[in-house]
Length: 110
Image 1: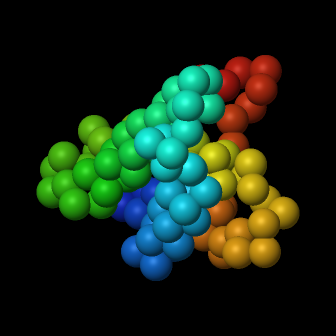
Image 2: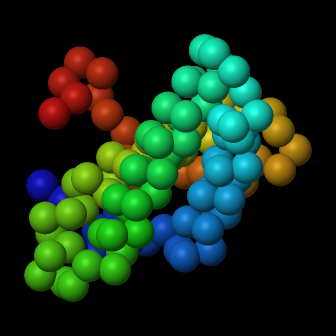
């Protein structure tokens, strides 16, 4: 199990801000869309916002709470990195921020 002060805590506030800005800027405004495109943009925004909130909640948690929030924050960070990876060829891709905190073993992910 991960411990407080673990991998997700090694990511700097600047890296968090870079990745959040990049991912948020890539998701279109759903109000300007219709039909399936609108639902897709809404779902992407909701998923990204939940991951961002989880990472920020963990980073603001008291040390005694951090041990219980770290696994969720790490998974959320990795999902944000995956979201960003959709646009890996974008000229503003934040390569310094888009780093996974750990990789899963495909044969035994847990």
